[in-house]
Image (cartoon, rainbow, N blue to C red; front, side):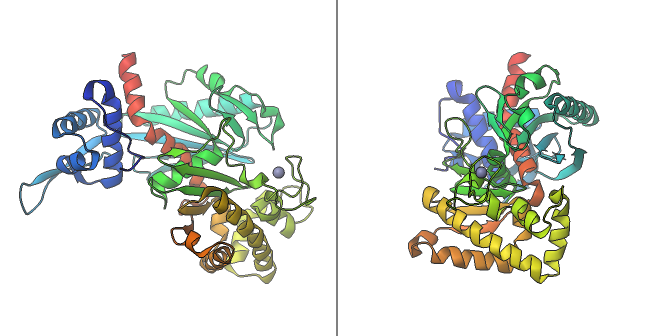
Length: 399
Ligand SMILES: [Zn+2]
């Protein structure tokens, strides 16, 4: 049984679990019939019918018409992609990315907002305004704006709702972001995650990974994070900072990292390290990312040599990660995934294979994300889509 879909239960006690299971099976297998859903879920036909009736009534699912040439024709079902919209927000420096999508992940808006500066209250104000604007804009859809998922580049504590640590913006440390957003009374469910955890959800819902895989998503936007997923859930760790992959130390007494340690992987294998190498002593090296991508297309020797060196370090990091986590898929996303072209990826895979016992690689695929620089924002979208049933249940119990 696919653990992502969950377990069975009696209808009375487990209504939401069953609904969630059917909803997720439709996401994975659409177009799909009620009989197929019964088979896939292990739930009886009556329970499936009850779940589908609820999902049809809410507008989440639609009937596509009758199909089947042999035996009894069946009505096929799919997610009603236009029933509502989802918002994904990536807070990064130097900009904030906001995407709005249908339920199937089709982009409706892709907005880049300027950085709101050192005061976190300004960010809350900005986000509150944009969510209010989007809520109004999409109010005519059956479910309207369903929810927003916000991902931060720092360490966010799920239990307390506080940003514990943001290395590149210390003024945000200990900021109670969840409470502050709640005070805005937006009337929209908001889910907050660390960027490192969000990216795996984005990849599973909208990218190349499957929910039944053991996935490591390496996101290289400016630093490097790793998001780990297995048995249907994200691995967050006790305090929620699992995946600080960029701060694994790969060099004794190596380069000084902004985390305070020396020799962190980020100082050798990140976009930040690459920009610093190609544009030394520039005050804002991040503005050269697009230029580097362009130079890669033209295979400029200086750039290719710098990337080659960067990838040698990244390979070591990935091998360490594989040895620690034993994934079936490693997905490289963010700008790092955009910079690595097909031939670089083949080389990286071959080098990694040389560093691992042969049978470790038999059930392992290494790929670059198809979501590019939107991977983390898609993670925000995925978290809301994943919570859709509980959002509707909460709304029902408030009525
Ligand atoms: Zn570090």
